[in-house]
Length: 160
Image 1 (tube, one colour):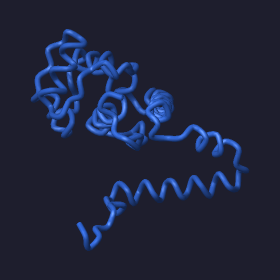
Image 2 (cartoon, one colour):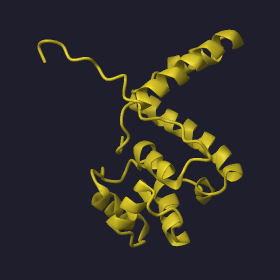
Image 3 (tube, helix red, strand yellow):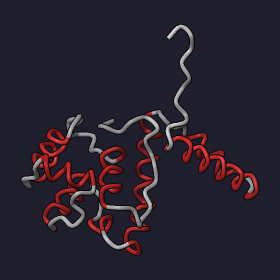
């Protein structure tokens, strides 16, 4: 399933930086037909091959690291085309919010299709009472915070 990592679905706030949005797209929306990219050179080459727009590895690096936060429209158009997202994803929070939600659902669907997320878990979530759903919401958000901080790494055993 492209470059998407197992369990990679992470929400990106519509107010997120361009760098955060580009990273989210690379981690969650990498096109199935594109060769997996291990670095910025391969990422730029895949985008250029698919869109015909000459994007350099330096541009990809600048976008991913936040060193370029106001790229040309042709660069944003190439990114939108490559990742299959509306150009509005890169826009103002009011425009990006609904698009962000749609992309999150699409990324979840890809996780289900890849077998890294069980569909029955999502169905069970829908079937929960509002009170139970609020509890699960809080647990998921807390686990996501801990995961972002890197505290969910497995502990090494004495045999490792």
